[in-house]
Amino acid sequence: MKHSARVRTWLALAGLLIASAAFGQSNLARIAFSPYTGEWRGVFRTYSAEGKLIDSLRVHQKYFWEGNTQKVIITDLHADGRKEISHADNFVRHDSLFCVVRKPDGQEIVEIGRLAGRRLIWRHVDPNKGSQEIFKEYVKGRGRRAVYYIDGVGVYGSGPQATILLFEGRYRKIK
Image (tube, rainbow, N blue to C red; front, side, top):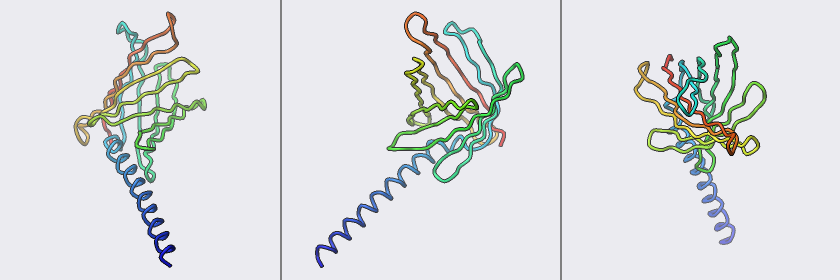
């Protein structure tokens, strides 16, 4: 009898630990991703390492919650009229932040991040393409005065043929 009571106690404690770990991950997700919830519209620009504008596109992003995952719908409007819609999931696993972006061509991009104060720091590495990106995202202001900032750098390829690009996004909250 004592043995089975001890087993039940250990099982109950294990259940509490699992539940508290899930609560901690859910709480971290809400803290990290909640400032982005809503709809944003703005411009995403890409520059050469020398600062020359290479590309500029209009962006509309919608962030919303489904359980402990923040869903994102990203609409990119290119200067030539092309429209691309991507989908992303923001979530927490093992105390790390993840953003998994699914592009319209089926490509999946996995970004791993961390929270640094009120900023998200993201890193994406693609060893098959020899590329990596690191960028920060943050929101300043509240309500319709809020501005969502993205600032980063990407290295594409390796050796003397590597290309370095700088990028920035500036979006205003519309909802």
